Amino acid sequence: MKKIVIVLLLCFSMPLFAGNVIVVHKDNDTSLSLSDAKKIYLGRSGAFDNGTRAVPITLAEGHAIRADFNRTILNKSESQYSGYWAKMSFTGRAIPPKEMTNSKEVKDFVAGNVNAVGIMNDEFVDESVRIVARF
Image (cartoon, rainbow, N blue to C red):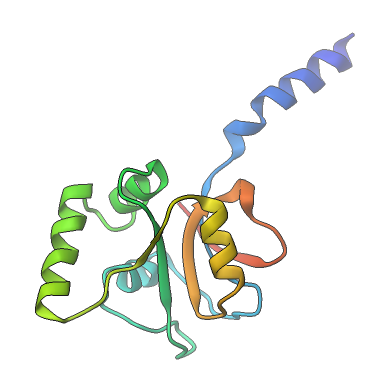
């Protein structure tokens, strides 16, 4: 009986261990700090530490993972983030990250593009992508 209770507790607590991650293609050997990710996602850097071009992928406006990433990593609210990219685009200084609707789309895009870097929920991670950071 005690074992059954423990197994049930583990099953119901598993979603608590899910988290948000930054991923790259499985063959991309870059190391990416949260500071590096911030530079890429704000258009201040267009490449990984190994010199290859970085293609940032984010989630659509209003998505909880995007809001968490913007707040914790970029130190911006959604409105600050949108305003920042409106200014950067208008002045021609940078192109905003490509937007996807969900974590599965992010994973599929990153899995098909060795230069892509994406934010997503770790429950969709498989052998086609590699986690480089958690947030």
